[in-house]
Length: 180
Image 1 (tube, rainbow, N blue to C red):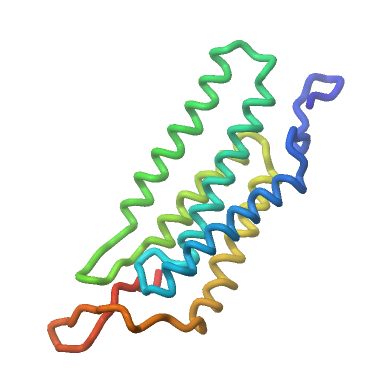
Image 2: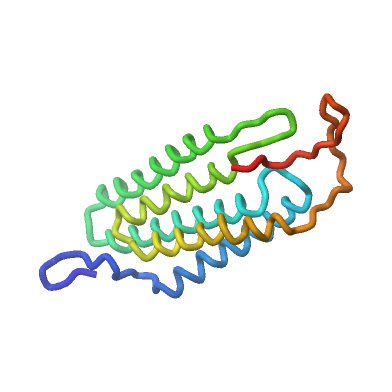
């Protein structure tokens, strides 16, 4: 992973780029399976939110594995400190993301924003450790989820047979995320 001058090559990874892409894409697809079901049932956290959360978690794990492999030759304390950075960023971003979620009656807003903030934390960690490919793949997949999947969500049929709550005007409203 180092050239003859001892400089770390930021594009050299222990996991192949294709394997990273497979792992991240599989995470997105599996997150979509759960998200589709939630979206169909008109639940607040839907398709895009689940896909982004799965992508972020996959990105964090790939980063942790790559840090482990890259730092094996270092002293024990060096590995622990790097992993603590990942833990701290993950917890901090999750705290910030939670602050974006707003509820009002049966309406929930900010879930996709929270998930995208969490993902941005993973992208930032990837860039910080020098894993530009992980960051680029996560960003490209996130843009796909946020733009293309949003179009799919808008034309996707939903199951309107589940109980809904009446608002104060007597009209039926289901628990659904507001635009964010």
